[in-house]
Length: 272
Image 1 (cartoon, rainbow, N blue to C red):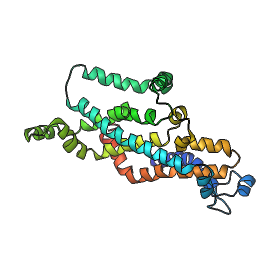
Image 2 (cartoon, rainbow, N blue to C red):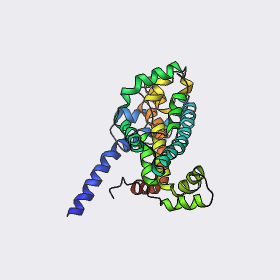
Image 3 (cartoon, one colour):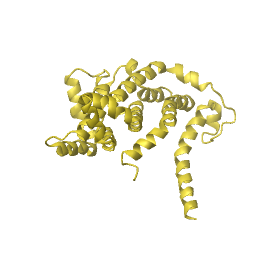
Image 4 (cartoon, rainbow, N blue to C red):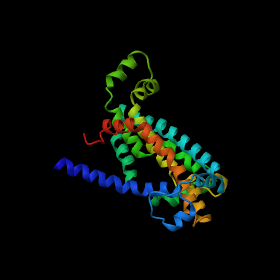
């Protein structure tokens, strides 16, 4: 009975999350007449694919997608590389104030982004970087966020130090140990951080909305808002554009799900 109740609770929770997505997917395949007649229906009676090419051409959507892909890929790679470097330093080297610096870094996770939003904007304005991709990309080259560094540090601590010592005896330098010993053994946590970084940058809205002014530089998230402003009554095309935006994240998670769960478990966040 206890197991049945647990399964029932899991199924109920899953349905709560699936219904909005199912409605989005259903609306994307509805005609405007069918949506006006019954917008709450989850199964379209006459499904159509016409909304997708209309949504793709109604605005410069290919440009939005290209901008988002460039920003997301650069930020994902930069987050993994620089985050692993910082995590390598915290996990393998002993230096003065190491724990204090690590705690200070973790404390930044407790600081709401809205608190630093105005000072950071003023810094980028003084650097004449407004309406460029720099404010969206450059921060990823400084570790990619405290949580990513923490996650990779916890994983590196599970790798035996004897491997480092053996590599040192073979003449390897510390950068070579990071690149040739630790990173090849860190596939699960790299996949986990990559997914987090990809999702954070692919779905980012506030940053592009604040720093980008030119429509040709907009990302998909801002473009969807622009789409809604222009076609506020045509939800079928808006939902079709949303499905196009959601699809890469779903595919990525399905491909990397096994590594994602393994990385969470081995880094000590899975309740072990």
